[in-house]
Figure 1 (cartoon, rainbow, N blue to C red):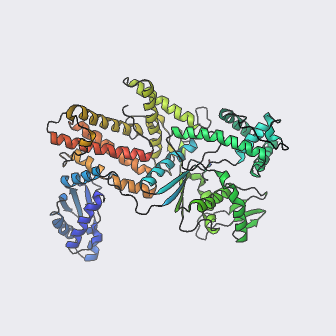
Figure 2 (cartoon, rainbow, N blue to C red):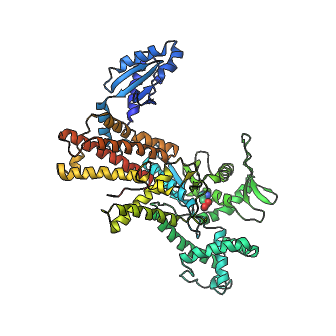
Figure 3 (cartoon, helix red, strand yellow):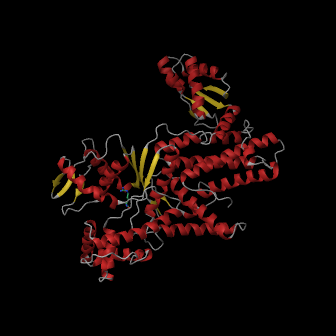
Length: 593
Ligand code: ARG
């Protein structure tokens, strides 16, 4: 289904042709002077130079033709040559009725479905999730939903950091605590115990302890580095410990991501790419793509047109250790072999942009990724505290994700308690849903690449551009619809579904209808630009107009039943649009709040 503005543009283009001009001048945009008109076309101004005619005369000629078109209520030519248009209320209503009848609300899937690997989340095993991982989870989950909705075949891959020094640190600390354990006995060749010698809460204490020790004690750090190397070389006891660390961490991560309404199709990590490293390096050497420089193996990735220096991509350090770039290249090798995706999309902190530039260029040079596979890095900005510095706890430490979620949930519970109608388990569930909307919307309403300030008070407000405000609007509309079902009509949803939206009777109703009609173009834009914030901006406008509409209009007490049915049909559509949009953003509305 074409969008309303596209349908109008077709008519304007036809009018340009009928008046003897090229159709390319018939481009229609939303008016930037909403007080003057809803739509505008500036083509007469551009055409004037080509046709050596006054732009106002061209505009008038086109207007005369458009005035006969039933899709428009009003068409005017304005000096020096603008064409201002208002859509006819009947045509707008017809468009919304068509939208209502479509299960996708008029938004067609992309005609060529792509195979996409979406690399997001990126937690580091055994380290607690911190707020830095929050943005990747939130933005990635929303993009996953948008891409799937638009018809792409998407695999979300968590890509855990599960093979690095943090594991070596834990092994080292465990060894210091229990040197006698079988895991450290290199002569042991029996079966290792099924039960891990630690719990997840032990790990949460062990890792920071080990990490602090390694910073103050060089010997300890070298031990950890060596343990990491032995793990990567496959030492049996260490692999057994690694598997147990993984099992405990993954179970914990799953629980945490579940609270965020974030899921992954693949639970792979850096360790899975390890077997691909040796053959990849062999091939890079054989193809003369990589060369030794000062003992290290590197690939030159600078290009003549670079304005800033792009340093070589290091594949192996001089001591033979692999690096972050090595695992990412090997992971691409693995992904190409397993899935041959059309696009690999990374949602990672923008401070890693140089890393990805190097990896992408090296992957092309080494022919790991063919030209036809797109590689995209979506770098997001930092989540800051009110002091505009990276978000910290009150004590100045790194904020753990779990604590942040709990803080916001408690705040929401307090607000909900003020509204005494909801209590007990329901109140807790509602608070959890609203809290999630506060966090996610607070994040997603900013352009991903920008830094933003995490302001709990603002994000949890029921007023203004916030998640709770959007949920509140949905709950309000649903409550009107339910009251209608109970009191006025005793009608089932099926029958209500056959109600038709009539032409708008007021400016406010028309403005709401026009905003609703922008659903498909908004989703398409968010999809093409990987920009969930466009959906936020759209639903904020839509929610404002909807609130105004039901404040200004008596709905449940309307005596003209045809009019009332039309209001109900319109609100049913609006709430479907809002619910579809928040689903694409990754949160949901409670039944009441
Ligand atoms: N684990 C990394 C971090 O915490 C993020 C991983 C991003 N994905 C990737 N393929 N490099 O910074």
